[in-house]
Amino acid sequence: MCVAQITKSFFSLSYVYLFIIFWHGYYDPMSSPSIDNSESKNPDIGTTVDPSIQRTIRTIKDVASNIRVASSRMRDVVRAVRESGAIDELTMAVHEATIAARDTTREISETARELKERGVIKDTATAVEETAVAAREIGETAKHTAQQVGESAPVTGEALRDAATKIKSTRKKRST
Image (cartoon, rainbow, N blue to C red; front, side, top):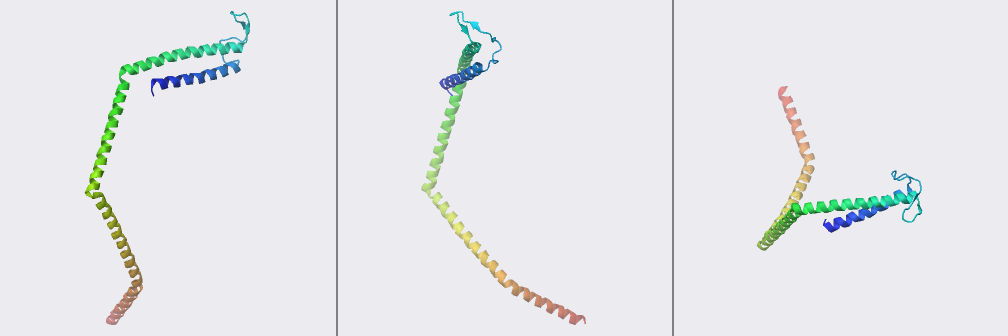
């Protein structure tokens, strides 16, 4: 944020603050205990001034005083920041970071261009595509193998049961 933006924001907030104080002071008779609620005379024109108007006037004067104090503090802060070199340091850091990002982007772009010119990117894409095709073929082969196992399992199971029965009967015959 630059000094002009800070100043603009400060004074915009000051106006909001003035409005809030005015609103509160004008409509709340208990808002400013330092001013009594009795009517007093204006020494310049000799007329009576309503207590709520007196509070409003006092509030406006207080806000004006606060603005003066805040403006002075803001000037001091801006001067101190400028004199400390913090702004220059921040500016240089951003500048260096920008240059580093630019250089990195250029290197990446050059590397990608070289890879493209040498055909590495195309070769890599072709290899990936061939790998995908081979993987699909392996999947199909595994699927067919699983189907064949499923189809032959009942026959194989029956053959094993028959063989086990024959072995058992042969053993029984020998043992008797």
